[in-house]
Amino acid sequence: MLNLKAADDSLVDEIGYFQELETLKFSNNMEDVYKFCIEPTFLKNLFDKIQYVNDIKQNNLQIMEAEIRKIHTNNFYMKITHNMDHMKNILKAEGTRYLVELVINSLSSIKGEDRKKFLPQITKFTTGDINALSLASSLDDIKNIIRIDGNEDQILNKLLSKEIDEYLFSFNKFNDISTVYAYFKLKEREIQNILWILECIRHEKKEYAGNIVKVNG
Image 1 (cartoon, one colour):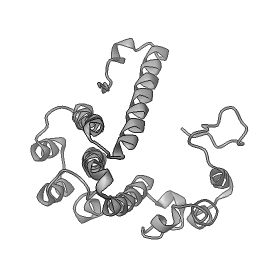
Image 2 (image 1 turned 180 degrees about the vertical axis):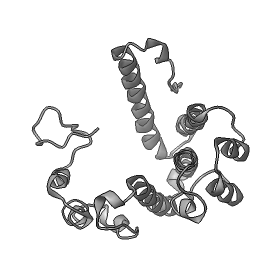
Image 3 (image 1 turned 90 degrees about the horizontal axis):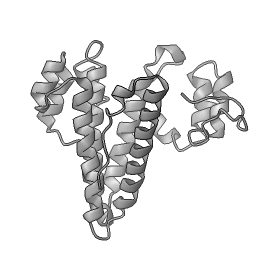
Image 4 (image 1 turned 60 degrees about the vertical axis):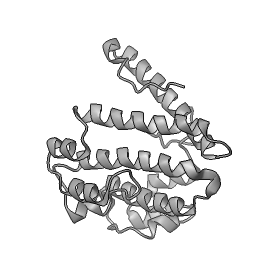
């Protein structure tokens, strides 16, 4: 969880911190958030394309994030040039896992067109698969559509493994700068694995320390 204390506070997550976040402490509604935190940043062009209400509590922040990410990914995908060809495969793998995660999280609350509008379009699924997933009402429905067995965590970890395979494969491509992106994503995964193991040790749950998606390469 990001700590929104003063910038020089030792508890601040320096990587996740940027100055505009300080304004959230005195923002009373979405108009304030937009004016002080969104408008001065690159998020403005993305934020202008989604719908929300002024009362912060009445907005589903996960849906807002998904809609913004969908727009951003679509825009980026359209701009990919020949020296980043493999980036398309990476984005599709990331979108595939994220779509399944969103469907799982919305099983009991949203489906149909309301769900479909925030699901990623850049994935490895067919249009028919995405339509079916927008209507899924149980984990069994999801498993039948994507043809992957297991519980929620196992399904997402299998999809994450395929994501990592795409990152690793980028190092076999010549003169493709998507390798840079893949390198940092792999480093990010290594850090997340270390943090998970440390949390397991801290909570005396060492038996769960092996529940990580390993990065091999």
